[in-house]
Amino acid sequence: MKKKRLIITIDGPSGAGKSTISKILAEKLHFTYIDTGAMYRCVGLEAGKQQVRTDDPDGLSRICQQIAIQFKWEQGINRVFCNGTEVTKQIRTPEMDMMASAVSKVPAVRKAMVSLQRNLAGNRRAILEGRDAGTVIFPDAELKIYLEASPLARGKRRHLEQLQRGLDVSLDATVEEMKQRDHNDSSREHSPLLMAADAHLLDTTTMDINAVVTAITALVKEIEQ
Image 1 (cartoon, rainbow, N blue to C red):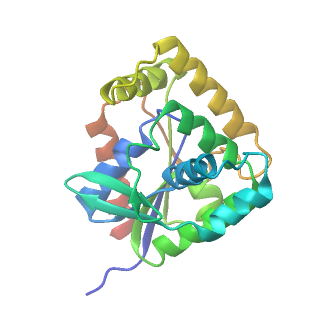
Image 2: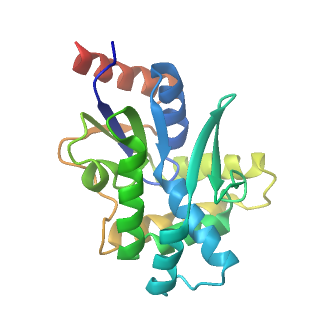
């Protein structure tokens, strides 16, 4: 028997644990995993390749009309493909962090990505992580989660990720970049970073991964009873 649709949205600022938690939940619960932030990173990557400025809405709109983004879950890794080429590592740099934040301000880009994100999720059992998943993409989601943590805790997590990728970036620079991105994402005119009124708030500053996964899994079980 096919299970009914169950959309879980996981929103929050950079470094709150969205990606880690979403991946674990998707694998544990057998849900489709959609990383909305990676999609904006793909647009930013293409903009750089095509030398389209982030303040050129027509150029960015053209990119969105032509772009093909796919996710493939392989051996615990959510591989990202843009126009047929794997870009999983390319889109995870400090430069792409800021490019994603810049292009996501453009209404035409957000409209195109939201449409694509809804199509990818369809009527499946899916987890979408991002910044407006529960407020704009799926305001009717069956379960909405908002993760937050202190700026220092988030900065340390992101800094560790960057070191593990071989990037030579200081902790102070990472924290400052994160604060700037927080400001950009929460103050933009279209689809700003906000917690949905009916979202469950989890502060992950002192919570370990297992505790967060357990808390969300319990909420899923409540819905499915």
